[in-house]
Image (cartoon, rainbow, N blue to C red; front, top):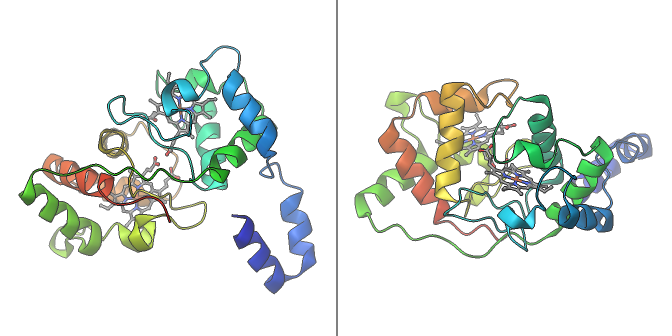
Length: 218
Ligand code: HEC
Ligand code: HEC
C-alpha cells in the first residue's frame, strides 16, 4: 500500500500524494496495536479469535488478517458496521470504533507478516479440481481463474483484490456461500457474487482446500 502510493505519487506528482495522505486511511500502527489488544469495549480483543499474530484459526473459521492490504482491511471493518457484511461472531467486535481507529487497526495488521503455515489436501482428486479452477478456471461454465483477479500466487492485488493464498478453507467456503446467499454485499460491482453463484458445492470445497494449501507469505 505504502509502496503503491509512493510509486503512484512519483508518476502523478505531489498534489496526488497530499490528497491521499490526508485521508483517514492513513493509520497509526502503534495506536492500532493498542486498540487490537483492548477491543472496542463491547467486543473481545482481536487476538482472542485472530490469534496473537493475526494468523487466524482454521478450526474456528477465523480468517488470517496479518499482511492483508490496509485499504482492504479498513473497507471490510466498515462493512461490518454498515451491515454490508453481517456475522454474529465478528460484527460486535468493531461496532464501537470510529473510522480513524479502524484505519489505525488496519495499518497495524497490514504491517504484520502474512502467516507461513499452509494446510495439506489429502484428497488427490479434490486437489486437482481446485488447482484447475484456481489457475485456469472452467470456461464451459463461465468460471474465470481466481488468479486473474487475485494476482500471481493468489497473494492479492492492491486494496480491491484480497490475498487468498493460505487463507483458512472453512472461512473461504463461508464467504463463497455468503455471496451465494446475498449476505455479503461488499462488492459494489458484484465481481465476486457473479463468480460465487456459478460454483457448485464440490467446486467450492475444492477451491477452498487448494487455496488454503498455497503459501501466503511473499
Ligand atoms: C469472537 C471472535 C472474533 C473476534 C474477537 C474478532 N473477530 Fe474478526 N472475524 C471473526 C470471524 C468469525 C470473521 C469472519 C466473519 C465473516 O464470515 O464475515 C472475522 C472477520 C474479520 C475480518 C475480515 C477479514 C477478511 O479477510 O475479509 C476482519 C478485517 C476482522 N475480522 C478484524 C477484526 C479485528 C480488527 C478485531 C478486533 C478489534 C476482530 N476482528 C475481532 C471473529 C472475530
Ligand atoms: C473478476 C475478478 C474476480 C475473480 C475472477 C475472482 N474474484 Fe474473488 N474477489 C474479487 C473481489 C473484487 C473481492 C473483494 C470483494 C470485497 O470487496 O469484499 C474478492 C474477494 C474474494 C474472497 C474474500 C476474501 C476475504 O478475505 O474475505 C474470496 C474467498 C474470493 N474472492 C474467492 C475467489 C475464488 C475462489 C475465485 C475463483 C473461483 C475468485 N475469488 C475469483 C474479485 C474476483
